[in-house]
Length: 313
Image: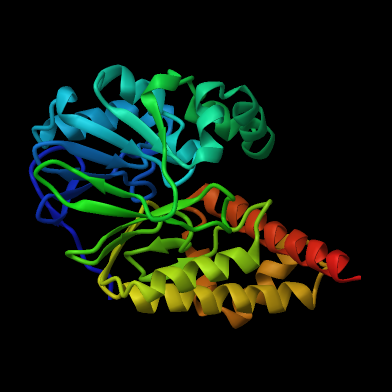
């Protein structure tokens, strides 16, 4: 079962473990959808700060934790999609001593986000506008992280950096080895903790082969607690990772056998085979973005299969 982080004083702030907190930043007023994680020692680090529209809520949560702007040392991005780090420039305006750390492929996109913003609008449409425009970050305030890097947080833990492509080519995950806590970003899917279910997040350009390898890499670390930005935690981290791997393979099998069907029909076929998806579909009214996301996930796997078939000819 999912762990239930304990509520503490302060707006939408959840205690996950000693020195580790999640803040439900409620983008567009939707609760239980997105949570940045805050590691607090003498310094603080924030993993996946969220989109522009929710930075005010994040700052409110940081203040409730007693985190002052000068204490924020790092803003870490698992990847540069708008819902994960689109609001970084606004947060860095508040935390003037903080540094944004991303995969090397993400650095120039955060310095000049014009192409990132246009691609985001092309994919998300009005939702991108609702999230808010991605702002530029000064280059001297951005650092690059690669596989094997370690990040010490003064008075807190050290994080190991993993490159975990698949969902995105520039995806990173973070691992805290002492307490065996994994921050997988979107590499391990969406976890709906109240129902203890997983659903894929595999929009184009998705790489199934890389995603499976990334999951194997994370399983090999033997994590105990997984902290999902979408949304919640599980104290059965390895099982959740293995479940997601099996789910991706199931989706690929079903989609491969029904390539010509529309995404909505494929979702119906998948729901007959995937009990997680069948339960997730009951949340469509609460999370209207979920159906569009699921359709995009079908399309991402479909395009990967087409690409792989073309490569093998």
